[in-house]
Each structure stands twice: as structure tokens, then as C-alpha cells.
Length: 627
Image (cartoon, rainbow, N blue to C red; front, side, top):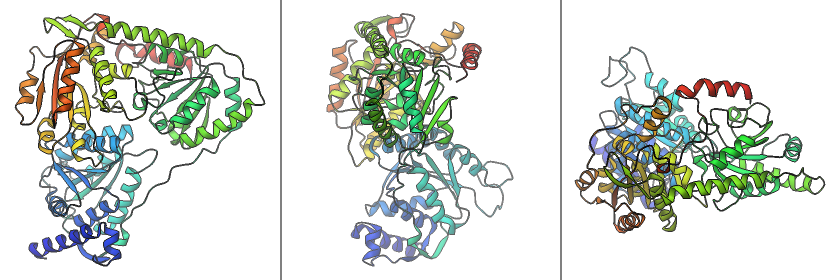
């Protein structure tokens, strides 16, 4: 088909859908034929539209020009929104943040080779945090005429597919007629209600423009995947275990984020306390006295106490990541585990487990109902467990206040008084909650101090990417604000080490009108690793730079980005945040922060971790516990 005719045809399809309001409406009023002679790339886009995937973060290359042309035409008709950005990693982070913060679906489009591999690396974030994102990658041609530029230089087929399948669900569109199957696999992967993740669709360069004769649009899959219901399991034994236990701790992971009311009720019924993973902040309100905050390798005094002393663990929607359960040593006195999860592998992570495989909210609701009935007939053993944990929470609050009262310290690198990280994070997150601003934490020391400090009253006030701890996530996430149908303003709390990894949002955020503030805590290093090196070996090495970077000049070099300095006081920081919020666009606040040996300059470490010189002791304890 002549290119002009093909363009006219695509424009006609797009216009019919736009005028009707949806593809289904266009089919119903017969302005769009059910059977079309259509290219693979256009059929793919129609399939994504059927699943309400209308946002695309792109870095086009020679492996994706055909997809780009289809997107150009459909964007002109108002059916999709495309952002051409400067980094595949940034594109992935933005798409992940959009789905995570607003629930809106998105796809990442790259070329073949290095671009696809960069996006693959960044997709570790949605894979780890359970976020559904589409990835459309160019791939080598199917006719194997010889090496394609940027393919993996090895005479084997589908090497990119092998790599993608290791990370998550993947499909190679080697055969154009299998498109509907590919779209169905992607729907299940990205919209899975309990364990969503990335889906990688590999598009050979010679297949994208292939014509599909009389393609039946009815083959395009759509629809919602239902939640699992309450678990089928031995509830009677679970109730017995609960009534026999004296010290119950709930450990809540990402799978419990939608079960807040049920979890709060369960805590009261079992006279227990809650400890959460960073991804589940806000699931138990900070003001709830049974909230013992975060627990794990970088936990809290009260959270780690509850884990250390509990005799029954009720695990809810948690993967038990190493830092979350101190590399499997976090529960030395737990005798039994009730594990609620939708994943069979995760639900049997611990020994001595009673597994309840089902939706967290529905399953806990059933447990609460049965427990209510049992408590009317049986007497629980008396325990001062809640009182003990409450004392530890008060100790933790006093510990935090000591650090918040130490507003600034003299820093050796800056050779002047600068704010401490705890004070900056506390001030910024308090300000964010008061102003209905979303807080997004980057990987590193800022993140680790952050989840010890945040005081969320509900889910969705804070997003901290601890699944992959991908440096540069938070600034890139701000780009999602320019794509979102549901407007939001966010503050990206990042360190200098993480920001340097992914600064492209300065350009792309300004270009597309992102609304947000980068709060850059600058201690001239990757402080989380410097601190780990010093704790284990006594010396920091190759994790810092010798001269300061002029981040203000960097931000000021980009038109429409507001760069702000602030006085080393709480008031000075608050004033800078207010100025940033008033700016119509992207802003960056540069805050030099303390790094050094003064313990009041950080929140501290309270747990174990199987890393470096600590490994042998941690491993030995794990095997001694045998949980």
C-alpha cells in the first residue's frame, strides 16, 4: 500500500474512534469496520486502546519508527498521549509512577538493543513493587539475514526474549497473527490484581509494518481480572493459634495496602501490634497506638522490638525481603506463622506456617468474623504485650525527637553549619501532608531515613521505591504528573548520588509541564553506602566526590525550572517549599545536609542484614532460629 494511502487509512480509523468516543462505540455505530486490512503496529495500538492503555513514554530509534508513526497519527486525533523523553530509564520510572500513584496505565516504547536493555534494567522497579507496565521493544528481524545492528551479537534466535522472560512475562511477536494472544498475556501480567508486573512485547523490525488482511477487531482482548476471594484454609486452627499466643505481631507488606480497615480491626481483636514494610506506609495510621512503624534491617526501636519478641507472626501480603525481616532472622521467638498471601511461593516462605492463600482484605475479614465469634465463647490468655510495645514506641518517639531538635550540625565537607537529614525529611513530609502533596522517596540514605520518619495516616501519601531501590526513581517519577488525567503535585526527596544517576527530568519535566519539586539533599556522596562501608570496614571508599556540584546552576540552565536555595533552618526550608509549590512547573531546592559521625545526624540502624562482614553471624543465627 502506498504510504500516503496508509496514512489516510490510519487517520480515518483514528477519526472514527475519536468521534464515537471509543473503539467499541465506533464498531457499534459501524463507522469502524470490524474487519480491517491493517498493519501489525496499528493493530497493536488498537489492542492497547481496548485495554485503556493510552499513555506512552518513548525513546524512538531505528527499531521503533513504525510504531512511532502510528502513535503520531493517533495522538493527533486525541486518542493517545506521547512523551518523547531523553532516557529509557526515565521513561520506565515515569510509567511506573503514573500507574502507582494514579492507577493510570502506560507503555514504554524503545528501539532495539541498548535502549531496550536500559528500560529492562529500570523495569526491575515495577517487577519488584508489583506495578503493571507495558514495554514495547524493537527486536531483530525474523528472516535472520545476518546480524542486525544492536542485536545481541550471537548467532542464536530470540536472545532478547530469553532475557526478558527472566525478568517477567514476555512475548515475541514473531508471527503477526498471534497478536491477540500477546495482548491477552500482557493484560493478565499488567492488570493482575495481586501480583502485577511488567510485560515485555518484542516487536521484530520487519514485522511491525506487516499487513494483517481482514484482521478481526473482536479478537482484541479487554476486561478486568477479578480479585481472589477469601482463602480456603484451616481457619479453625488459625483461630486456635491466635487465642493461644501471647505476643502477636502483624507484618504488613504491599499485598496488605488495600486491607486497612480489616487490619485495624484484627489488631484490636488479637491485642496485637503492627509492623510494616516501607511500601505499605499508611496502611495502619501513624496515630494508631498499635502501629509500631517500620521493622527490619533499617527499622525502628519499636518495630524491631515487636519482631524480636513476638511468638506468633501474622504475615500479610509480604515477600519477606532481606531488609524487611533481617535476612530471615527478624523473628527469633516466633513459634508459628499465619501467612496470608496470593502467591504460593511467598505464603510458604517460613517454616511452621499455616497458609491462607487469598485476597488479604477478604481473608482477614473472614478471620475477624470467626475470631469475634470465638472470643464470645473462649477467654484469651492475659498478656502485657501491648503495654511493652507501647513503652518501646514512646522510646522511639523520644529518640526521634532528639534528632528533630538537633536542627543543624557543623559539616566537614561544607565547612559550615548545615541541616541534618532527619530534620529536612521531617519538615518536608509534614509540609507535604499539610498541603496534600505526594512524597516520593529515592533510593539511598534519604530513603532509609525517610521510612523511619514518615507519619502517614493513610495509604498513598508516600511512595518509597524500596523494591528495587533504583537510584534516580523519584525525580523521574515527577514526569508522571504531566501525563496524569488525575492531577497531582509531588515532592521527590532525593540525594545527590541518586539525582546524578537520572537528571533528565529537568529537561523533560520542563518540556511537558511536570508539576513537582525535587528536594535535593546534598551530602556530596552516596551516603548509604559510605555509611555501610564505615560500619563494616572503618573506611568509606569510592562513594563520594571531592568537590561540590552547583546543582542550582544546573537546574537554572533549563528554562522554566525554578532553582531555590534555603537557609539552614526549618523556617528557611518551609519558605523554599512554599515558593516551589507556588511555581507553575518543575522546581529544585538544593539543601546541603550533614554527613559525619555525630549520631544525631541520622536515624540509626537497628536490625541485622546478610551482607559483607555481617554475613556469617547473620546466617548462623538464621539457621539456629530455623524459621
